[in-house]
Image 1 (spheres, rainbow, N blue to C red):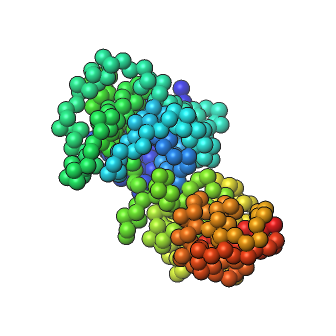
Image 2 (cartoon, rainbow, N blue to C red):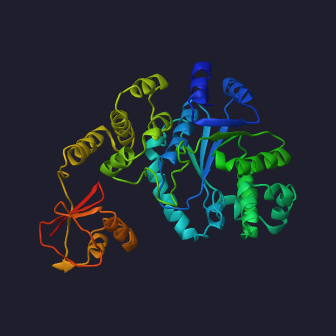
Image 3 (cartoon, rainbow, N blue to C red):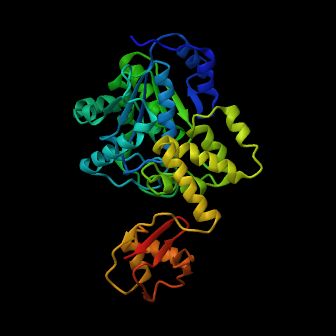
Length: 401
C-alpha cells in the first residue's frame, strides 16, 4: 500500500492556502482524517461541455495533485454521461444537450490539457481516470426510481438556480431534476471518501453525501473550492462564454491572456494557479507596479504548461509588441487571393477572429489595423497586397501572401 504523508504542517498548508473555501461536514475532522495515515479516495468530476479548459479548472487539478502527493488515491471523473444531461448551474435556461460523440471529443482534448498538472506517469499511485457512462448508462428504471425515492421535490427545488427560474417564470425541465441524482450516484459507484468541487456544485455533492450514507452506510467529505471570481465585478472564467485564460492556447496567447487580467486578479491567480509559497507571493505583491507582478505570474503559469524556454520567448515577444510598440518576430502568413476584400471577411479568412460578428465588433472598436493604420469601417472593401500586416486586437497578427 502507498505510504501516506501525515505531516501536519504540509496538510495545513494545503488546507489554508486559500483554494479551499469550505469543508463539509467539518474541516477539523477532515484534517484529522488526513493525519490519520488512512488512504482516502478523492474524486473530482468534470463535464466535458466544451472543448477547452481555463485556469479556474487548472487549480482544481493542482489541488488534487497535492492530495495525491500525500499518498491518497485520486480519481478524475469525466462526466461523459452527465455532460449530456447538462447541469443547470449558473444558467437561467436549460443547457443544450450534447451528443456522446461531442462529449468524447471534448474529453480527449481535456486529457491533453491537464497532463502537465498531475503525475499521470508516476510509477506509484498515479491519478485514475474514470467515466460515469460506465455505470449511469446501466441504471434500470427500477434502480432510478429507487434512487429518486431518497429525495423530495422540495429538496431539489431549493436549488438557487431553480428558485431564480421560478421567480422569472422560466421553465425547469424534468431531466434537470435528475442531474443532482446522477452526480450523487457517482460517489456511490466509486465508493469515495472525499469529493472536491466548486462552490457552485455543493448542492450536487451533498446529494452524493446523502446517497452514499444511505446506500453504503459511510460518510463523505465535500471539499468546496473557490471559483476565482473577480472580487470587483464577480465575473467568472467561463468555458461556455469564452472568458478567461485558456489552457489550449499557444505560449504567446496564454501569456497575453494573463497580462490582460485585471490587477485585482493577480494575487488570486498566484495563490490558486502557481506552486509558489504564500511568502513568495506576498513578496511579489509588494512590487510597486502591478504590471511587474503580473509579468512574473504569466511567466510562472506559461512555464507550467509550455516549459521555461517557451515561456521566456513569450515574455520577450510580449515586451516587443506592447512595451516597444513593435511586432512579433515571426508572423504567420495567410494566402489571400483577392486584392480587394471586406475587412471583416479578411479577419475571418485569416482566422484572426472566430466569427464575422466578432470581426465587426473588433473593427467598430478600432481594433483592426492594416500596416499600423486603423480600419474604421467594415462596410467598405480595403485594398491589400502581399506583405501587408494585419493586426486584430492587441495580440494577433497575420501577414498576407
